[in-house]
Image (cartoon, rainbow, N blue to C red; front, side):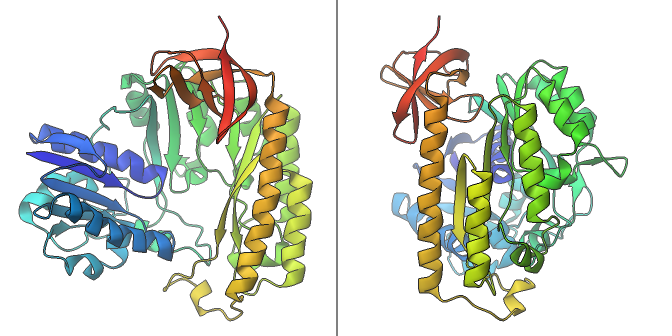
Amino acid sequence: MIASVVTLGCKVNEYESQSVLNQLQRAGYQVREGLVFADVYVLNSCAVTNLAERKSRQYITKILKINPNAKIVVMGCASQNNPDQFLKNPNVVALTGNFGKNDIVSILNSQNKQPQPIQKEYANFARPIETRARQYIKIQDGCDYFCTYCLIPYLRGRSRSRSIADILDEIKSTNANEVVLTGINMSDFKSNNQLALKDLIEQIDKLNKRFRLSSLECNVLDDQLLNTLASSKNFCPHFHLSLQSACNQTLKRMNRHYSIEDFISIVKKIRQKFANPTISTDIIVGFKGETDDEFNDTIKNLKKIKFDFMHIFPYSERAGTVASKMSGDVDKKVVAEREKQIQALNSKFKADFYKRNQGKIQTMLVEAVEGNLSLGYTNNYIYAYCPTKLEVGKIYRVKLTKPHKDGMLAELIN
């Protein structure tokens, strides 16, 4: 019996899908990933935007084109939010939300069709199956921030953290040469009810394995944490700092926990403490009530910050959030024009980023080989194309030469 896991959404979903693969393999299934032929599919859904939820539904159709007789299990944020949208399809034989992923075989065997109750404690998962050169390590789940636009705290529950000992044990057991710490809001990682990201990183650094951090809130990056990261020989200096808007009035309506001045100050400190850091962000365009003046403030401040690259999203209203009850919808044509302006700025930022890195020597983790071309991310998160056949999973020194596709060409340094 063949089972395939199909994953949409965030790095936490990626981690949990790798765990599900392990659970299925232990239960005797031949396991695969993605839209390939299988007898059973586990769809790990996403609901961060309306588009993501619609894509989750569309993947049912894609699966049934491959195997019309497939049995489908749906899990994740979209099924937590609205299970009925999936249960209409007779091929969906079982369903859960975000809770129950750590026991997916029982969900499948019992043909459960109700999301499990939201958990208050951190749920341990079976260790992920290792199918990638870079291994995600989940350290935290849930969120207490309740940004007004975001549905995820209602679908993932309140913030809860994994034990430091368990995290370290998993990192020690992985064969991957790079690990990525991830969580729904890992800036809120705690031990004994105290913020403890710095303590965790200090322990991880002793393991002498290359590591990087996924998305962070800027307000967690105090001098102590920055000094800890700057002194590490294993930290990959890429900071993805979720900004969402560069205007204080908009940030206040979003219920974000910082001002644009705070954010700019943190970025300055990062650039002072690290020789060549990469700083990226997320921007939401056209949030409720965003005026022309507020948008112009965002543009002005983005030019001040000069991110290396940005992920840009039009505001997506989610029923049940505080923002869904706010007035001040922005006309869709206006949103599209604003998005176009920020995308143009993003193109300039990326071009400057690649130009700044031309001639720089970095370390590259090889994640795939296509013909004689080795592909993978550098330590500062540039996707590198090296015209030399190298070993997947190994780290090499390379010299970045010029922009290429969505990254840069690189020469192997002997």
